[in-house]
Image (cartoon, rainbow, N blue to C red):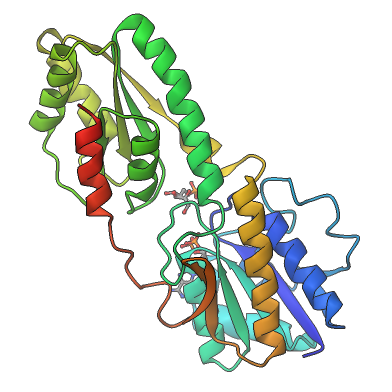
Length: 323
Ligand code: ADP
Ligand code: F6P
């Protein structure tokens, strides 16, 4: 393995830069050359590449986002797009590729591998919905951003005796809402994995009021149905019965930015280095992940679609804590 490529794809998140840095510097330490592919699969199809050396990745360990850029590329989902990508990988004399991204990106990586190109995947998504790792790059920082927001909203909620619906990201996963809700001391957590009717949400507010709480924090996963605005409309219609006034805060893309936490920098560094070692050892076709305290391999064909078990015990604990 003489020359490898690295790209970041899909939704960005904190920790992508330290991962690119780790891939580059590990590869250089084994005498390999590194090409950075810009804007994920779109850049691979467009052949937008830049040589990376140790200095090119200097000063980025603490920076959010990805200096290579990222994208969602519908073209790459087609066989034609994948053929263009393979053509450019070969045109640049690349012997291997590290794909850093979420489950869509890793599904794309599996497609390249199935067509004969050596690829290793690194799970990076704030949603934490990729199999093969307990935690993906970006999750820890996003959770800390959510906690910062919950703490601040609690201040104003208590001053005004209000209930706040705080919507967090996660696509179809309630992971961020559950973890953020428990760590933030929420009164109610609404996730797609557990059906909670609107009447139960209203009752949750009433219960919090009766218990004498000064606020009621409801953390809502973006994937919860019927959705944050529908809950808000339902609650506002019943304002007189609830005790609390209701406000909504959608945290949105603030969760994807910011300096990566210590945990994310370390995870990104370990997984980026592990991905390169896999390529060097000729073991392509896997996702590298953190399982327990060890780095483990899961086939690219399995990891993106492997469902992550929802932590029902923690959800039950949240119910005790909200009292
Ligand atoms: P994430 O990687 O964060 O989950 P997406 O789901 O948007 O983000 O996927 C990122 C990109 O990965 C897509 O824009 C597409 O180029 C590629 N991709 C997603 N799903 C597939 C698929 N089934 N086959 C091939 N490529 C895919
Ligand atoms: O996958 C990461 C994520 O932030 C999801 O939580 C969210 O549903 C989606 O990406 C938002 O995508 P976009 O940045 O394209 O609006």
